[in-house]
Length: 308
Ligand code: MLT
Ligand code: MN
Ligand code: ZN
Image (tube, rainbow, N blue to C red; front, side, top):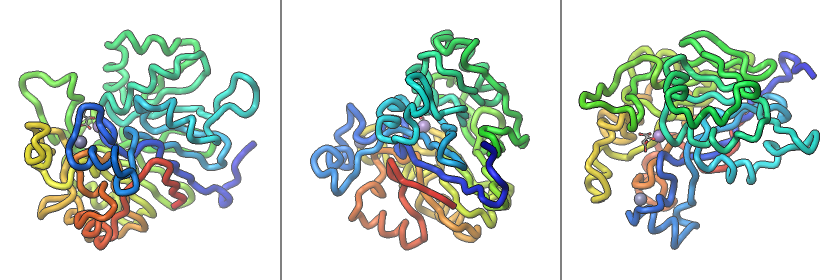
């Protein structure tokens, strides 16, 4: 069935809204993780970073594939087999970097249903160097390179364009010298443009460059890196020694944060996603949540639906 122009409408389902580790994180007892265990009304538990997109509700593409993908699919009837005893509505998967939270779920989709796997040549190289990904049989899962700034048809009638954003190589690939903020094929954002209505998904970003701000201007919706509230949040919480900057994630708050950097960019909806379990915006009644919402930001949750 073809999807007529003009009747098409992008639908986004947030499958997982947390950053690497999920919420609560198995080995964390920070305030947010504690509340997620004891007061799930005040802190809604969340799985790791992934969205599903469709324009007809029948055929779907995943953007990123989290370790919890099976649990995520279990919650989404539209993503379950419907046409026959062996079927999946998922026709393609695009990954935005090589982080564990974005690729590990691929290992759970190895039961010989065909789909196309899209990534930059660099990220396909990372997957090829990890032979465990060969469980995705080559005669079932076609690995397709995406070039920066060249649209690819993820689904009939739905193209996606990936573009470089300042980022960092995956944690497990870090050498002695780590370059943070480099732009290339290792970390990308994704643009969807359906009949002129644009939606961006950028789960990891180290800085908002003037070029990025210009690209985002006028978009119907932005799903943006909400990893940390403040740069030294993990250090202050006593659960880590890294700053957000060192992890390749800009923080939400402060003069150099994403709320300030994007304040003057015209956007229909602005939504934080890929949120780390230490981030106080995850607490429904926190002052930080109120501050973000007052600035026009929404906080993604698993199951959130966005039809820009
Ligand atoms: C990140 O987003 O910085 C990574 O997912 C961290 C990790 O690999 O745990
Ligand atoms: Mn991540
Ligand atoms: Zn925690």
